[in-house]
Each structure stands twice: as C-alpha cells, then as structure tokens.
Length: 267
Image (tube, rainbow, N blue to C red; front, top):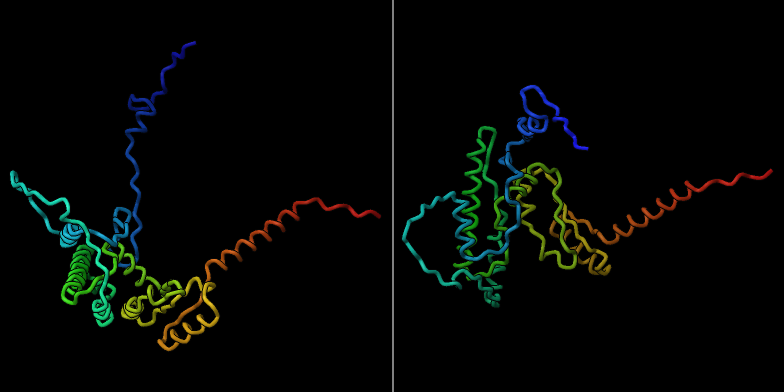
C-alpha cells in the first residue's frame, strides 16, 4: 500500500524538515576568561609540538611569527636543489661540549612580555610574537658564534603561550623528571621564571621512577638537591598504579560479597 499522505506543513508553507534546516543555528557562546590573555580563539590555535624543522620550515615559521606578507611575482622561476632543505645532524665535539657548559645561561625559557589591564589583545599578541622571534634569533646567534650544537627544542609559540598562562594561573608549579638522570631533564631556569612572575609561587621537583634507584642513589640525589635549595619529592608512578589496582580489586571483592544472599540462621 502506497502512502499518499503529504508531509506535515508548518506556518510559512515549507515542510518541517526544511524549516529546521533553514532555522538559524545558535552560536556557541564563549566564556571569557577573567584573566587578560590572548586565547579568545584557543580552539583554533595549533598546539602541536614542533621540535625539529628544516631550513625552509624555519624560514616560513619566522615569517609567520613576524607577520610578514609576501606577494607572488609571475614568471619569476627559481630552481631549487632537492637537498637544499635537509637537516644535517652533527655530533658535538669535546670542544663544543666545553662551550655548552660555559654557555648554559643562554638556554633560558622565553619570557612573556610585560602586560597590564590597559594592554589590548592585539598589542599583547604582537609583543609576544616579537619577543619569541627575538628569543629564537638569540639561540641561532649563540649556536653560530659559540660553535654549539643545540638539542631539539620547542619552536611552536602557541605551546610556550600555554606555559606562560599555566605559570600565571598556578600557585604551585611541579616539574616532573626521570630520577635516573634528573639533571638531563630538569630546567632550573623554569623555576627561576616562575619566581619572576610571582615570588610567592611554589616550585616542586618531582623525581619519578624512584623505584628504579637504589637507596644509596636516592640519598645522594637528595643531598644534592638539598644543597641547591630545591624542593623535591620522590615518586613512583608504577608503584602508585599497583596500589590503585589492588584497592580496586579489594573494593570489587567487597561489593561482590555484599551481593551474595545471607543464609538464615537455624534455631
């Protein structure tokens, strides 16, 4: 049997589905932060970490940060070597290692430019781009002038912006490192920057994987960080996970025993 009923009409002459399709969609209202930041469009920002890039990427990223515009010129052909933009990895020599140790002070966390309630979002965005570009240029100059080989570091401004905001909004900043070689991962300048933002902020160094160290090794590292005046804690994510799993098993066993019927006592 063929259905000959016409779709239900609504005021205006169109079908219900057509009317819903044409209805204006409600825009999602964005809740503005109480702090002055540039993250109004945080959901559209690129937060992908960038630690390695070739010469062409470096050039394009610098242009984006500097807000440089380019105009295409027709019939201006340039032939590039296919190997022109490949990254060459060079192992550091003994002399370069000595230079690295004497130039550790150059490896600083990029600072956020000063701002106050009168600074507009556009002004702060421009100042942050300029400061970050200057930080990148200084590292390049140090690498060239001091004959250094820098390890891969974060080159995405948006990632550093997230760090700036986290530091500004946090009362306690915890830096987690591998306790088997903590100085390889520990950034003392990060704690220095936190204190520059606000002296009352607390900094804690969390030494993870402490279960892989011997008692003697933990004592030696503890003496070192105490002598440096660093607030630290030993931690083992593995041991904590085991504790959580054991607690869940006990809770599950207790719940199962509660569900079992209780036998009536015979007189």
